[in-house]
Image (cartoon, rainbow, N blue to C red; front, side):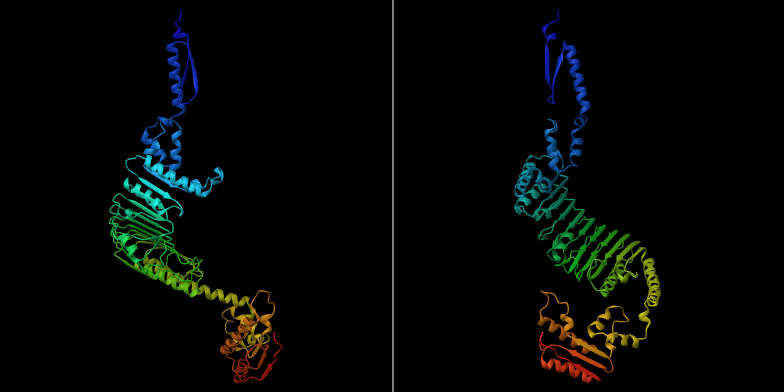
Length: 510
């Protein structure tokens, strides 16, 4: 007779919280339990991986999601605390605002509490990367405390998008990579030394003065890569880059006072980097460049886009010449990529140019393209004149046509082309009528007094520039709002211009 132990029904609770019943003898039960374990192991193979491998997998997740894996099982409970990468972004919490119906202020408090708890419980021996991105609504002391905790753990890479930075950051011996972002003024302390820093990335920050930028860069003795993107330079007069170990330099798109500023970078760039191999200047035109010891330079990329800037055509050519001065300073480069938009100084018909090769080859191509462009322009203007029949009329005929128009409209033809620019100044008839300014005036537009001032200025300018040998007809019609001395001065100008017909018709007060 079988014993009670062999016939009893036993229930086992497994880690997956499933209740499984095994019935039969002891050997049979053991066999069934073993089969269940094997099945569970096949179902969850990732949990059987070594702890270091699991930590490596979690390092690719934001810390918020890595911490959430602690509820999977007992094995996962504390794995996140050993991950050598911490990635905090308050935008992950703000993104869920509509889902959890919390106010933004409460979410920021939650984010601060979360970062504090993680830094207390985290026990990795060293930090490989510390990424922190938060808005400007956090206390500076709070943000600095988080950065200080990362520095205490000998962090190697710091990626910060914060409104302030801790002073100890500039004296870290473990930092290899440093990226600073967000718009804030960078005040570099008096004591700066980053002996291990190899990569420095500055994005959307503003330098307080020339000394701060020079001090930061020169205090990195092994710096190899320097990236400067959209940094404010309005307080800079000379941006000095002195780094004897620097191999890669990239400067992109300097921030101006506004997006369509008419003035560009009014400072000079000085580069002293004997080991520099790669140089990239993108949408970056300084007032002057001074390169020293660039004997190791292999490749350079220069691109300037002036198409979005509200500047005069002559200024575009001026900045094109600045770029040509730049490439002369890097004459020993082996390969140069030169591109530009809306820069007539680069020898392109519409200001779009692209060159690649050595300095001598590029200089030859620019000269060749400029000659070809000049020939194309002559053909273009000749064909345009053939299509535009009125421009082919004699000069005197064009003046005769304009003599039938009020002077206001005759002057307006000066914008048609170069031929028409000064044509109106030789028209022998002058016809001034202030009612043309009032015609079509809408409510809320300029007042009558302002229009009178505009009319007076217009007549003064026309009489000053007009250079016909004699005035055939002078017609003046204006109200009573003008000073008699001013009207008499206009009539005297007509008399001095040997006017033949004088027609002065004052009308009622406007």
